[in-house]
Amino acid sequence: MPTRRQSFWPGQQRQAYREGTGGKPGRITWHGGHSMNSPQNATVITLIVPLFNEVESVGLLASSLSNLKRALEADARHVLHLRLVDDGSTDGTLAALQQTFATWQNLEILRHPSNQGIAAAIMTGLHSAQTEIACSLDADCTYDPLTLVPMLERLTDGVDLVTASPYHPEGMVLNVPRWRLWLSKAASRLYRLALGLPLHTYTSCCRVYRRSAVVDLELRHGGFQGVAELLVLLALRGGKIVEQPAVLSVRRHGKSKMRLLRTILGHLSLIVRTCRLRAGAAAANALGSAIGSPSPRTPRLLPTQLERTTA
Image 1 (cartoon, rainbow, N blue to C red):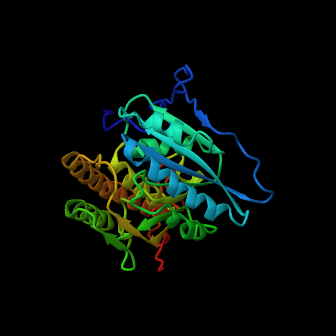
Image 2: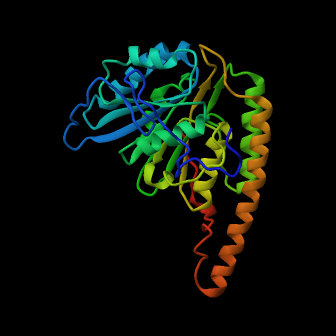
C-alpha cells in the first residue's frame, strides 16, 4: 500500500497493462469493439467505472450501461465513451469484461497490475480520458446509471463537479446495510463541519466532473476515502460543486470491498487534514488581503461556491 505521503496522479504510481495481448508496462489500454465517429456537434462524455473483483456484477453492469447509452445517444446530442478500470482483480473480472464488452464501441479497458483503490482507479480513468466531461460510477450499480442523465444537465458553465446525493433531503436510501449508512452519513457530517460547506454527501462515487478542474489534483488516499479527498481538494481551491438528489440501493451481486476499520481511520485522518488545510487557506487569504493579493501557493477558499439544488 502507498504511504500517506505518496500521491495518485500526477506521478508515476499508476501503470496499466494491455491484458491478453502481450502488453508491456505503461499506460496502455485494451480496446473493445471499434471507435465510432461521433455525430456532428455531439458532446462526447467519458464514463469511468472502477472494478475490483466484480466478476459477479459484470452482467448487470453491461445491461445497465446499455440503458444509459441508449438514453444519452437517443437524440444524437451525446456520445458515450467507456473507461473500465480493472483495479488488480484476481477473480476473473478482466476476462469477463473482455468477453461481455467485446463488441462495444468507444470502450477501453485499463488494468492496474495490483489493487490500488477505487479513488486511484477513478484518477487513472480521468487521466486516460480525452474529453472535458467525465463521469464515474460504482460497478455494482448501487446507483442506477440513469442517475447520470439529470446530473449531466447540472454541469452548466462554472460548475466543476456534480455529485449524487442520497443523503440530500430529497434523496433516498434503499436496503443499504446500517453500518454502511451510518459510516457514510457520519463521514459526510464531519466533512461538512470541517469544510464549512452545506453539502449532504461527500462519499458518493457517482459523479460528473469537469475534467480540467480535477485531473491535476494529487490524492494521498487511493481507497474509499480518496473519493472524499477529491471533493475536499476541489472545494478548497474554489471549485463549484452541485448536488443531485439520488437513490442509493443495496448491491445485488458480490460483496463490498470496503475494509471498515481502515476506512474509518482514513476518513478521520482526512477530516483532520481538511481542518488544517482550511485554516491554512483562511490564513493565506487574510495575508493576501493585507498585502493586496492572495498567496500563490495556497488555494483561495471560496465557501460560497457550493450550489444547493433540489430535485
